[in-house]
Image (cartoon, rainbow over all chains, first blue to last red; front, side, top):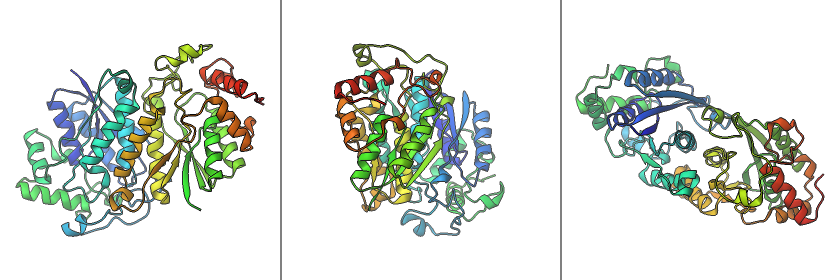
Length: 223
Length: 223
């Protein structure tokens, strides 16, 4: 069975992505980050999901992205609430963490190289992506190209790094339906951005609103 | 004066690169990494160089690359000694840290985005690069392309991220001569990979040998 590194935040999308990688027959090495996010409770969700789904290993990397500032997820800026879908669709929100996916993928690439794995899974989504630049297909393609030049494998022509983004073109409703079909226990996951919520989703941040909309459109109950 | 993020290990190359960025008129934000390297003494050199050269700010980011293993720089594997230039020119050495430059550049990119800087300097060198894949021009070009898709600036078409690699085609001798012309105090810098050397260069690792060769060819004394 080939190995894969799977980025896992503990949210619905990355948990579904991990379930897909496992279904495809990979031995999965789940990677999460304590990056100074105020909603650190998502790391408990990531640990629950990795254990329940049967990841080979779960590693939490500590990085201090809060040293840079610039995002509501890592500083005292308020997380926006009750925004409409139209508001979410325009511009880049204050919850954007500069270069976050680039940093996460770079650690995944390092681990993949050590594990001699060619496959990296990331649950980015370009439709409900709330305006994050680093969730778009053209970004992922450019990252993969760079990754193949960055590593031993690329130089030696031995293997090719592939960045898998199975959810990238899916609606949130489709993600919910696929996750249900995969038997994912939704109650293990955590999507809310709000640090004040203390483990209970706030119901009003972009992440909560997109999740609710997805479940409603899918006609599935979110436990 | 425009801002630039400058990666700074404390070695000769990155110190020269910082001096070049300053000469070009940038306000420099120096970024170093405590990444689990056993030759941590290089961080003291980085702090000395940043202060002496007049960087605007010097930030040390802590990341645990040793959690992945796979390199003599972050594990108990022995650092190779007394290799010939021919040996160094073939294959990727055990001191290669998987995806290190990709990770370093990704943090630089995040900081640049927060600072609203468009310029990143990295002192990579493709000639004396000891076989590291992530020091080659084609890698840097692919990184820059990805970086411009990864960030707010790329989406909004506001600014363009430029990765500057002034040393990439230079011989070590030329680096020594340029550094001397810039007035760099060589005694501030530290190049040795060997953790056993306790602040004194071992004289036998690839980094020491390449440095000595560069000074000899330049006809300059390394204090």
